[in-house]
Image 1 (cartoon, helix red, strand yellow):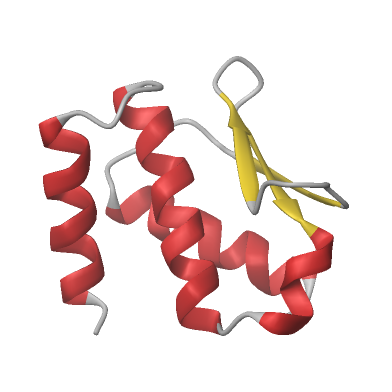
Image 2 (cartoon, rainbow, N blue to C red; image 1 turned 180 degrees about the vertical axis):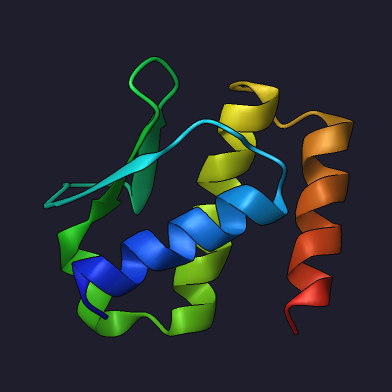
Amino acid sequence: MYVKEIRRMVDNLRRELGIEEKVSVRIKPMKRKKATISLIRKEIRINKNILPDISERELMEIVVHELLHLKYGIFHTREFLEEMEVILNKKK
């Protein structure tokens, strides 16, 4: 999946989750994590090394997870987990 398609995915999911702020995407190699988000910069960083090995569905799950951190903060609150489950079940 190319960066342009990933950015489109992030933007569509961001709107679906009701996140108004623009979110930038950066693809970079990481040693341990699949992805991270900077709450200050509003930037999702996706591990370049995993992209050849994951499906579009898995990437979508990662993006939703990171976007929900932007919406709810760093903790996996009940609301965070419930919304993640709703969104992912809708996308089946």
